[in-house]
Image (cartoon, rainbow, N blue to C red; front, top):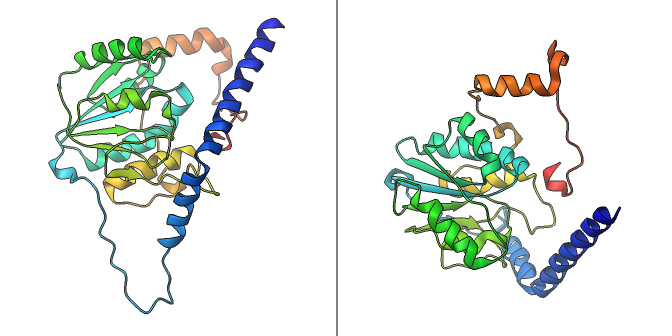
Length: 257
């Protein structure tokens, strides 16, 4: 009972801090909403619009780093976006930084060339040392493009900015400030928010030049190992006699349901 109460208290403090931060940045969010209204196409306008997109040249990218130290569910939601990135940059080496608990999932997906794990810590100096060790485990010493493949979450964004990269791609959000010109509108702060899988695709869309719908939420084929099969049988035993579906409908945020 004490542990449950402590967890609820901790979660309450976390939510209160998030609300306070959003109130502090209220003017910034309102400016972004106004920007979206200003850029909305007007079919009655007495002029013709030509939009020149600002995006990296995919053909010139040889080393791409995807920064994704996230939970398991968030890692699953990112797989369609990683699949799109792989399809549009087949010539590039794609490296991924993830948490240790999600490494096996990414390995089985076959979507990335290099993997390294990073466990963020609350204390920035410890995280900095861990990030340095993680980067040393990758063959590339610097990257043409680093992608923050996360919903706008500023917690580990300072770590992302420490990755040696010529260019950076991340969500457009007042809590995540950088000098990068590649900031994607992923609808995380708008009145109508998309599902997180679509937010990840929209972020990659700044690079691919595509607009995505739920029809594009396609998962890769996984290369499961014998060890994976044994683990499933240990967990479920004889209940594997026919196909089954696993549902997890209790995600806290609506964009994850």
